[in-house]
Amino acid sequence: MAMPALPFVTAFYAALTGLLCVLLSALVIRQRFRRRVSIGDGGDAEMSRISRVFGNFAEYAALVLVLLALLEICGGSRVLVHALGIAFVASRVAHAFGLARTTEVNPGRAAGIITTLLVILVASIALLVIVTRKVLG
Image 1 (cartoon, one colour):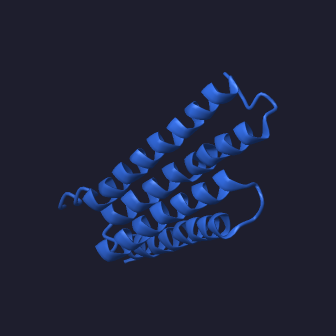
Image 2 (cartoon, rainbow, N blue to C red; image 1 turned 60 degrees about the vertical axis):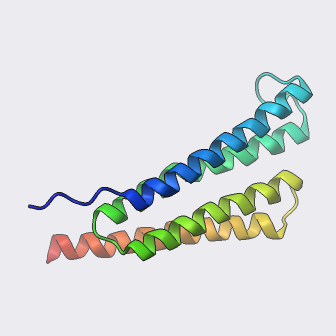
């Protein structure tokens, strides 16, 4: 049995996701210093919003990276993995900008969450198709 290829495409998007994580964390830390809030949001709406920017990012990042890695390892199309990786990173940037500006629904937030959910849906379906073919075939 041949060793599966290492998920280098996913590793690239994991690195970009890591950089985005550091950036969003820095924004939260900066806001904590400005507002003098050590834990939680201190009842400050702006602190709450900035914390949610990071929290929302973190809630999706791990799942998407696992799906992309499994898709790549299981023989999914590199083009598909790239497309999903690009879409995910772009969606998280759009969502972060949208939510950082206002808690109101806005194009950045809407596009960010819709695209993120589409990435999860497409990656999940593609992975199910590949695994089902391997198991049944």
